[in-house]
Length: 490
Image (cartoon, rainbow, N blue to C red):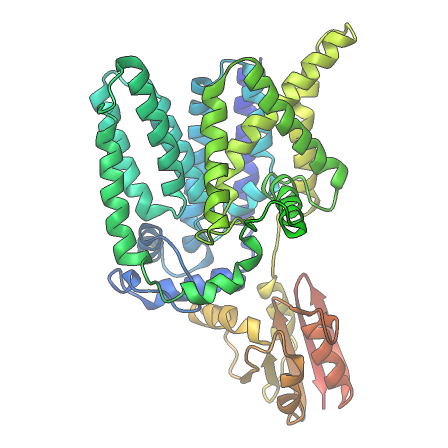
């Protein structure tokens, strides 16, 4: 029963991700920045540091460029690779789970948590490498656990996959360290030989990472710009400080609220997954199943250490690859807790109850499905149907990249004068001189709205709208999710 149910659940997850992919949601700011880099450069030019403070693995960029060359420049081409990575991750998860643990109830709960998670469905069609990170994690775990007919085949497969993963995923080195240590210890336990054959793939990975580090990471010009941006995601080093515990709690909320998808705005829900994780660790330890604990916890510890050293941020996107590892432990906690409850109350096991943790995530997923982050196209369509030949179009600074991308794809086809206000997202007063020179019919078109939390304590769009209202009247408007368009007569 559970095996068939697992297939059904994963198929439903594929259906949800496919609907999300085909929904054609608008490219948002970060996607547009990366897309423009890919459009502007050849394969060779993509080896150089990207503009707009973007960073992405080289092989990921090349695959993206390949799909553009193959299918043309459009949203679907750019999001195809993450979608294919999701499909690959689903297949690998199904094949991997029996190698980790024989319990089909556990496998079913893991499948529901993965397939119905809103972050998984969303990142399956996001022009970023985060779903590829998940694919890399599952592939490397699968290769180190799969019972190959010969050790030589396993070592060869791990060597090649590991070297490719370094150029495909920024987090590959964390996973490679984990499975490298696991594989070496496994060989050592069987043969009591420190210099065992697993050092062959480890050596290949070290050489590949060394070359990649020297060519693409060492003295990267974007590092100095990104360190302040990711400052909130670096773990404080002093465990006796209040800042350390505040950061730890925020990270806990992020992990179980945003990465797993239990919604950080519902404390009772994400605390439930947090408790399940603790119970799951206890249950695996009690059963002496240290294999799963080592493979799932070690990457988290390594990432936190890298974060403490300010080498790699621990944030929702950069730590999303941990999602399948987290739910493996949570699933054990839920199964152990339910089994204990049935036993304590002398009740017959209610099989349907094992689906409840996943259905809770599904409810959150369906609440805003298909998810739209910054509806550029809907807002533009509203403006396009009402714009007049002499109207001026004013863009807030964070809209520039998406506007340029959609101009390049032909979706934006207006000949009106367009004014780009520049990046004043955190200095709203800098907008005033430019706004005061405008007259006639002026459109304010904005996406990716920022908030001034210190001086004005309002959204950038609200500040600009209020200032323009002082000089004229609003003729028409639309407000959407982090986007909007207003036509003023000044």
